[in-house]
Length: 242
Image (cartoon, rainbow, N blue to C red; front, side, top):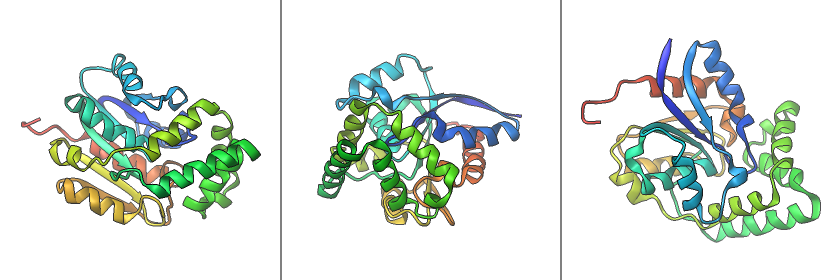
C-alpha cells in the first residue's frame, strides 16, 4: 500500500472532477490509498485570492497539489500565496508564462462561440485543437462536452479571464524549493516541450516526463501513465531539508 498526504487536484477550463476519474480508478486498482480533494472551478472568481482563501481554509497545514492546464496556472498562484503549504507539486500540461494577446483573442472568440452555439461547441473546438487524436474517441469526447455543458456561464467567463490575465510565474518557480514534476503530451500544441523547458530553466531540479501519443488532455488520454508517474512522485519520502 502507498500512503501520502492529501492531494488537492485542480482541473482545467470547462472541466470538473470527472477529468481525474480515470486516473483515480487506476490508483485504486494499484491499491493506492490517498486522500484526494478536487477543487471546483465552477466557483472560480476573476480575483482568485478570495477563491484560494476559501480552498485553503479547508486544507491541512501541508498537502500535495496536482494542477492540469488552467489548474496548473492556479497551482502556480498558490506558490505566491502560501508556498509553505505545498509539499509536492505536479504541473500537468502546465505553462508558467504570462497571458498574452493570443490568449486574449482565444478567450474573446470562445466567449462569442459560447453565446452563439453553446458550451459544447467551445469544448469540441478546444479538444479538436489541442488533442486531435483524442477528439475521435467518442467516449472521451462526450465526457469533455458533458463537463463543459455543466459549467456555469459565470465560471466559464472567470476561467477565461484568469487564463488570459495570468502573471508570469518564473520567479515563483525559481524561489520555491519543493519537489516539482512536469508532465506534458508530445502532441500538445498549447503546453508542449517549449513550455516545459522554460519551466525547467527556472527550476532545474524539476523532473519532466513527456508522454508519447498524447495531446493536451493528458488525464483522459494517458491516465495509466499519469497515475503511475504521480503515485511514484507523491510516495517519495521528503528530504531532511523539507
